[in-house]
Length: 503
Image 1 (cartoon, one colour):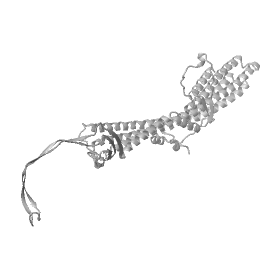
Image 2 (image 1 turned 135 degrees about the horizontal axis):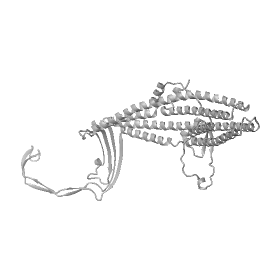
Image 3 (image 1 turned 30 degrees about the vertical axis):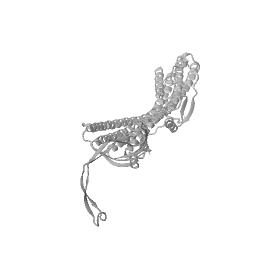
Image 4 (image 1 turned 30 degrees about the horizontal axis):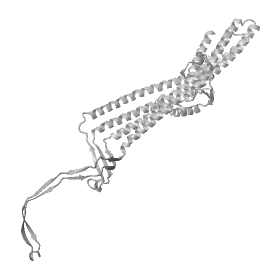
């Protein structure tokens, strides 16, 4: 009987502690230092699983980080799309020069050689008809002094508008856009993975709290029955025929008191499981959540392994992230190859500047103007830089595609393991249910026989402990089945249950 008690204690302790999240100890217990410990103010709520999931999605501290990553990826995608738009810039400036700029026209001398030229005298001057007369002129020299010409005033206000539109880039912008879109898709899948992890943790903690409560209640029920058996043993030992001895009574009492200590531990585990559930939902450590479900449900499903694996490739966030990575590497290859092609852009400029001077350079024609043009850049030789960039991008693309093959096999193996485990849990559920029912009947028969002194005390106690053990194993089997379903949700996403639900 002692060995049965030890076995029961180990099983119940293992089942109850499996439901809890270990919380780090931030500081030593004040009671160890002689301080007065005030009981924490706990807020207990009774919530369903859907309510717990909704609260976790609202208050979990894991989700904001992934949401910020999605926002950053969206901004990067918009940055890549900006390359398709014309780039417009406005510029303005004010300058004050220390002196007005000028232009010094140097002094020059111009010499004109002498000679004779024919001059036509119009009719009516010397006669009735025009007359040509020779005219002689001497050599002449003209001196032009140096001139200091002022160009503008020292105060200048300038403004301009510039426009550049990249017309052809050899696929560079498309490559950047594909990389940014793939990064956004990967960030969204990572956020979805975070949501699945939060949902998986909450679901496990929720049913773990249900399991802890069931184990606590099982311990109390078993203790109550053993107390009744102890009272009956005491009565039979004192007033019976002598078949039940004092040794039987004392051994029974040891079992009862040992179980009483175990029930206290189960009570603590139930409280901690409810606190752990609240912690997983993102609530304060002072709060506790009590599950509304009275027991862990058992919902079998109808699906084939091939269908589950195929659905996994469709809904698994890691698979979607890797496919986004492949698209990103393809975009990187396209961007690298664009270095081999020319780039063509349209340019335009509108300028104006203001100056108080109206001569020199500060004329109305010079103060305002515009220009348009076409610019082209043709790569001729870059020391094989572009070629090696393309090789690097192709190598990384091949690496990611090989990782996709490994992930395909890994996901298939994961799903197969969960599928087989679910099938084993289904069979175990049926077996443990039958064993629990048989243990209950065996306990009833032994108690009735014990009242008539037909069986020994040890056999009665063993029957009650075996019933508790089989019931605990059955509860644990139900929890394992739910945990496996939650694990399957984590591997392939919650969408799979829409396909695998029993009609």
